[in-house]
Amino acid sequence: MKKGIAVLSLILLGVFMAQCKDNQESITNESVDTTITPKGEPVQEEPTQIAFLGTYQGVYPWEEEGQNMQVLNITTVIKDGNVYTYKVVTEDSEHNETGEWELEGDRLYLREDKYSAAKAFLIKGDKLHFLDSEGDVVNENESGDYILAKK
Image 1 (tube, helix red, strand yellow):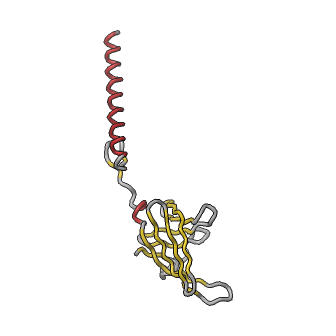
Image 2 (cartoon, helix red, strand yellow):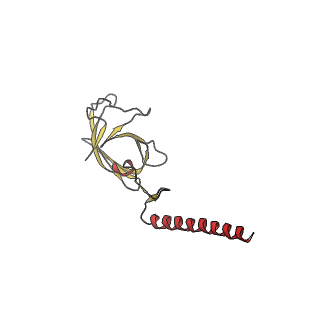
């Protein structure tokens, strides 16, 4: 009976020591923002999480009923910390907004505040393709309109 208790105590001590070692690795690795797999290998961040950050520019043709066609020059800056700026310049006006972005797979959503509709984009390489309210790409033929290219 005493041998059984001694063996059980050694097994529990081994499990306890293994848990302490795992916790120590977790604490050490949290300070450098690295996740460790069960095999002890670092997990690489998905490039889409940071690769799309930067400045994008493009043009949107715009025509309101009864008015001449205008060209909207768009510049948006996608920043770390889920913050963006969005600037629209026409020949006679300028509009600036800031807000938060959200990434869902290959879709990027820019929202000025929680009450406003989001501007939606499909991320394809180093370009943001404007999406309509149905979630479809506005200009499939890639003529350059409705596409913001990374600068």
